[in-house]
Length: 473
Image (cartoon, rainbow, N blue to C red; front, side, top):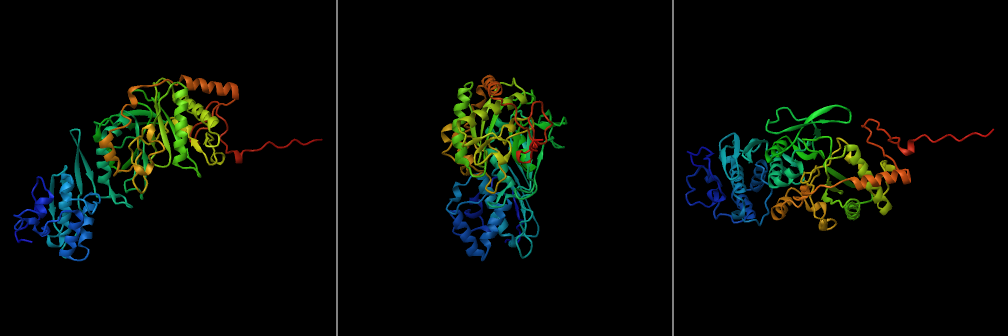
C-alpha cells in the first residue's frame, strides 16, 4: 500500500475497471486490489485473489460482498455485464477483502446505485468487515429512504439480505403498489430475519413519516387503530427498513373501511394435498365465479402451497355479506368436487382436501398481498398469475431473485384488475337458496371473534356433548 494512501475513495462513479484494469492504478489508494491480468469473470476474480493473497482470500471477498448487501454472483458472470451499482459494491467488497493492507477501523456508506463513498480501513493483521455498510440511502419517487444494516442476513439459507429485500420491492414497485394502494395494511415484521422472532404490526408505528397516510379501522373486539395505507414506493421501502417481509392489506380502501372492494377466496391445501390439487380446484372456482354473476377472478400463488383468487367488487356490501358470499362459493365448490374440496371449519373434518377458508373474508382477516415476500427459507413471493399459468407455473418458480426479471419482461400481470368491478347479488341469492332449500345457514367464526347472530356452535365436533340416551321405565 503506498505510504500516502488514506483508504478514502472519492465520491463519484466507481466501477470494476477503476479497481482492476486502469493503467494509472499504481499510485492509487486502491492499488492493493489491482489484479494483473484483470479478471474477466467473477470466478476468475476469486481465483486471482486466492492465487495472490493465499488461503481464504476468496472467502474474504464473498464475506465483504455479503456485508455490502450484494447477492451472490455466478462464477461465469462477466464483470463488465454487471449493473453499475453492483460493480460499485463489488469494487468496495474487493477493497475490504484487502483489509490487512489498510488502516484499522471500517466504515462504508453507499449513496444510490453506482455512487459510493468509503472510509475503508482494516484491523491490523486481519480483515474487518463487521461494520460494513452501516446504512444506504435508496431513492424512490423523489424521496430518500434510509436503510440501516443493509447487509443483515434475512434469509440465511441463501444469504439474502435486508438490502436484497428492499431492492426486490423496488423492482416490483408498480405491482405491489397496485395491490396496496390506499388500503389499511398490517405489516408482518421480521427484524432479525426469518429465523428470528416476528410479529404483526397493526397500528401505525411511532415515528412513521407524515407523508404516509393512515386509515382508522375497527377490530371485531371493538378496539380500533390507525393503520398505514401505502400510496407510494417510498412507503414500501420504509416498511422494509423495519424488517417487513409480508404486507397484509385489508380488502377495503381508506375512504370506506367498512365495505370491502374485493372478494378473496383462499384455497388452502390440507395434509395429503398439494399445490397441483389447489390448481385443479382453482380452475373449477373460475367456472363457478363466471356462472354466478359473470365474476372474473384473478389468481396468484400464496407463496406457499395455496392459491388465492381475488374478485374486484363494488364496495356496496358489508364484511358479513361478503363472507356470506364466500361461504356460498365454498358450498357450490363442495357440491361440484366433494372428494377434492371442503368448507369444513374444523380440521378434523376436512380430510385430504382443499379447504376454502371462508373466514379470510371476515373483518380484520387479511391475505398476503401480491408480490409480498413470504417468510420461508428460499424467500418466495406471492406471484400474480394468468389463468393459463395456473397448474403450469409453480410456487418454487417465484422468489426475490426470479420475480424481478419476470416483472421486467411482463410487467404486472394483474395490472387490469381494478378496471371492472362486479356485483355479489348472484352469490348472495345462492346463499339464500342454500339456507331456504337445504337448511344451510352460517358457519363458525374464528375463536377470537365475538359470537355472531345465527352462528352455530364453535365447539369442535369431537368434543361436543352428545345427547344422553333416554332411559326407559
